[in-house]
Picture 1 (cartoon, rainbow, N blue to C red):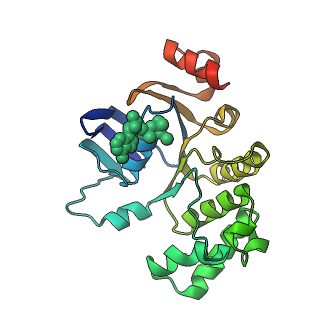
Picture 2 (picture 1 turned 90 degrees about the vertical axis):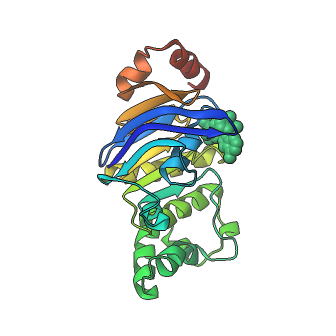
Length: 240
Ligand code: ADP
Ligand code: MG
């Protein structure tokens, strides 16, 4: 589904991603971990073309992405992104937030977009909040709306950048539960998170990033019980 080869990204001479290569299969759930500043967000942003790589290749659905030949917005539509701060439109109802992109970018009819949106809001357990405004919702509810909004574009991959880091502890579970359901439905997901219990339970693969490089990866069972790299061990001691 996604193939990344020798991806490099620098900011003002600082090498933030250094020869990253990853393959992500359909329906795979990959969790990225690593210390703050290690390049996790930059990697997700390069996958979503919010940042443009300096070198390397990104293939999506078997096709190399060449921004000289392809429409950036079309490529981005394949990638649903959920951020730490939900970025909902505050002046729009929950439903309006969810149908915004399908109607204005995908040019779906409003009726069709609303039907799909209600289905998704139902899926994240918020159908009853459709006509409320973001400020009337808890952080966990807002994040579930943000997930529904990303899904409304029918992406083939969902990227999550620390989706629960801004939430009060008692609201983390409902968002993780929503993500678990998505994984169960077969969604391909790349998730940056410090929720190791979630990673252990849901991830097919955990990837440890340090200084812009993949230093270790594995199935969560092996990864968490017997990490090979000293840096991984130290990191896990800090977050577990
Ligand atoms: P993480 O998400 O793992 O905490 P980031 O990908 O956000 O790490 O950042 C990796 C490094 O890149 C950091 O040193 C950060 O300061 C730097 N960086 C990220 N975005 C930018 C930017 N737009 N301009 C300059 N430096 C950046
Ligand atoms: Mg980050």
